[in-house]
Image (cartoon, rainbow, N blue to C red; front, top):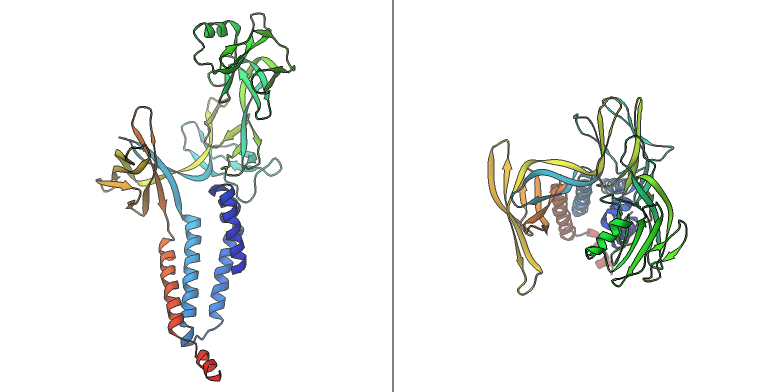
Amino acid sequence: MILVLAVLLASGTIVESRYSTPVAKRFVYGTWWFGSFLVLLAVNLFCSAFSRFPWKKHQTGFVITHLGIIFILVGSLQTQQWGVDGQIGLREGEEGHVFQQDKPTLYYQLGDGAVEKVPAAFPYREPNADHPLMVQMPEGGLLMVDQFYLNAQKTIQGRVPEGKEKAYPAVHLLLNSSFVHENQWLFLGHPDYGHLDLGPASAFFEKEGDWKKRLAHGAKDVSPNALAILLGTDGSLKYQTRYHGDFGPVQAMETRQDYSTGWMDMQFKVADRLDEAVPEEVFQDQSLEYQKDPEPALHFEVLRTPDKYSGWLGYQSQPVSFTLSGGEIISVAYGPQRQELPFSLHLLKFNVGFDPGTDKPASYASDVFYIDPEKGTQVPSTISMNHPLHYMGYTVYQASYEKDPDGKFTSVFSVGADPGIWLKYGGAIVLVLGIIFMFWFKNPAWGKKENNA
């Protein structure tokens, strides 16, 4: 069993180094079989020690050592099941008591009712169309999850509008080169999906007249390499390219025909177009790449007679809301688990020190008040990298920070609660004592071997 444990830990280390800690947690450390193995190991150790009962004096160290290992394993399992590990970010002058744990959760709310939570990590079996996750809503109706991708890529597609949905002219643009493969819909006039940013290049979909006005004003927001798909007054499509700051002529184009952008070996075409379209988020399953954290997504469906609504939710994407025929609004969201601290943190000032002559941070700390609403107390404290705050069973660490555009700082704290920590510490002490006793009480057989020699 020790050999198997060594192989499992080595596998987890390799997975974590090649991918990320969340991937190693999902496929190794957080699995049911890894936890079951630790339980089996504890039973094995107990039986190994108990099989020598009644114990002799020279076996004292042996028994104590095994007892210490069992304490450590029990404490680790307790931490795995009931431990808390999350983050909370506060701006200077802000107060908060809600932190986020990396435990994917599906939220739904009917009207102004209570926000309901459904665990959505799916560590044992991922839901699909044949075996969906089904949740009976307290107010009546059914919430289903019939598709789940551990790592998903979001794309925006155009669909025909339903009812009074606001629609836009749209084109389905394909860009291909030896380095870039883009498959994207562009919606004319949409604030978010009217253009595509490719880093050193960009693509636009605009009315021909609006594009001419943009160029007349200097085209300051157009990258040196750019592609513009233009909608003429007669409904025809045209295009114009820009390469190293120089614009080419405006040319007519046809759908499903390849054209060259003039930069790199990039080819493009409009695969389809719709006079009226609504942008819709669609997710596709993607394989995990090395050094990449998974970006999960799920497909849900709400059934509440006579209404039916379905859609996709990306992790930490914007909540989706829709109105039922009775006028009630249902909101659905997917993201980390939100949990409340029994006390509040108020960030007074964030302090950062830099290495001399550089902009590299050498140290940073947060001056805070921790506020107990039940006792009515407000206590000042400084949380730094090596000096966390311990209060009411929680430990608050200084994790990182961000500088906001207005010059203020956002301090990011790690929040942890480890119910198994004393078992693990105690087990470690007992383990060391057992080893000492093993050397202290020598086995009488050693002396016999020396005499025989």
